[in-house]
Image 1 (cartoon, helix red, strand yellow):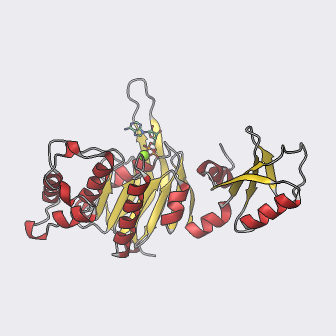
Image 2 (cartoon, protein in one colour):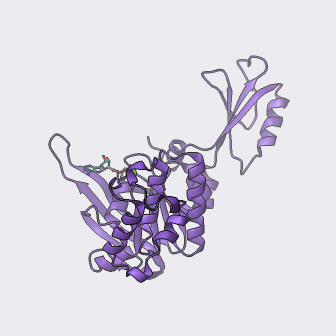
Length: 311
Ligand code: ADP
Ligand code: MG
């Protein structure tokens, strides 16, 4: 595939933050190779400190890389910085908004910064899509956290970039807003925008993304279609409270079962191999009467364990 077929492409991307005062130097990216296919919804997963924001901030031109190359929509960030910058919209992790401007003014300022001609500006259209049209003239300081997040998304879209990157967009965002944000992201993707989002919630990536990369400690640990990744790691845990106290020894052939600290039975199973109903049947066959039942998806921590055998 020629690099022009990727929305983003990094080769050997490195970043070492210099030592400052008592903090030693930190190698945040140790040579990242990553390609984001055009048209995808791409998930960049990793625990806190993995290097996700560093990666994105290099693309945004906010952090200087220490080595390697990066292309945005086929434009090298060193050789063609202007075109590279024009091809990407970034919603940063921090909710940084100038409190003394209105959303309308913030959008116009941003459009001016990207050289979008007045006749081509879509301030009201974008704010409406983000459910902020009634806030056009409100002071930004009066906006709730959720509204600020949506305003940052709106701001990232002023220059109509083919790639939209959202860095931890749902951190601290309530469920309803999360839904709204995802619906809009999916809509944008259908309209042709490549979406990259970072998250440390596997379920979020699982729901939205067609391709997932996992980074940890500045290195790529996995790069797969979501389907392939889940086939490897899609373990679920069923937490069962039994009607009667559980016996010390349990015979549950083919199931990985443990008794938890709070006295529940934790059964780990792979839904691709065995349906939840079959797990319940096995429990009943073993004479366990189920009083209460809860299931949990794979935790990213467990995913790392599986993929890396570390931690
Ligand atoms: P993530 O977004 O995955 O949580 P970051 O890219 O923010 O990870 O951070 C990666 C590593 O680099 C962490 O160890 C973090 O402490 C360090 N780091 C991030 N930004 C800076 C900075 N400006 N100066 C020094 N170290 C930094
Ligand atoms: Mg981050």
